[in-house]
Length: 237
Image (cartoon, rainbow, N blue to C red; front, side):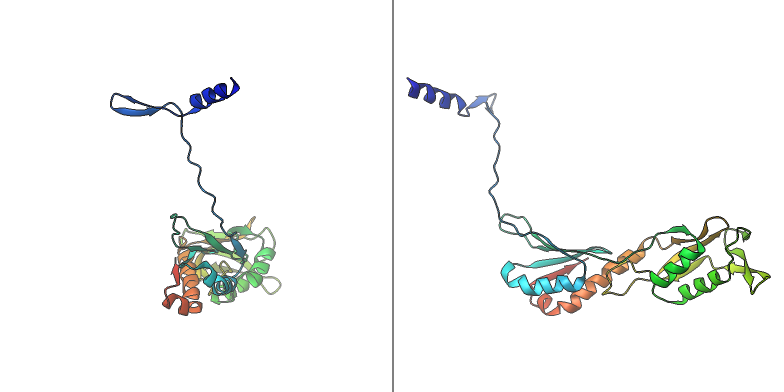
């Protein structure tokens, strides 16, 4: 009796199909259970050299073509090509430790520190350091602005005041991408305000990010040249 009851329950649980109006219907939804696939954990590093070392050490174990992509000015991702199930394995990720630059206004003292520590010295930093050295910290700083050029009042020596013209745009090279590659130089809009201090604002529309990605790709093209030529590694932007 119990066996018949169990058979009846099993029969009721079986999915049945019906033909209605030329269409096939089922009386229960079906869910596909994907098979388990062992995948490697993504290894995260902070430098491009670490990515190269990982690729050279483990490429033979991967046994497939590896794709190296500069996803952003400060990010790199390494993945496999299509596997038999048309999936990819994300093998390595790199995130730059570069400090970057906060745009906007800052005090004179903060600007002096940033120019000395967050930028590669060039003509732009030299000009701004000279400008800041001749500005006062008093709130009596005055400015003249016609929308194209701006002048601010600064002190020369102890008591002599003069009008110093501020360049509206300056080329600067802050640390914004991986330290193994050339830092892109880009244009910044310089503003001076009596209350807020001096301001740095990006003025190139983000073109520097494209240059940074090209520099990253060129780094891998140089340091993985033999693997690229052998068809084992592909570098992308």
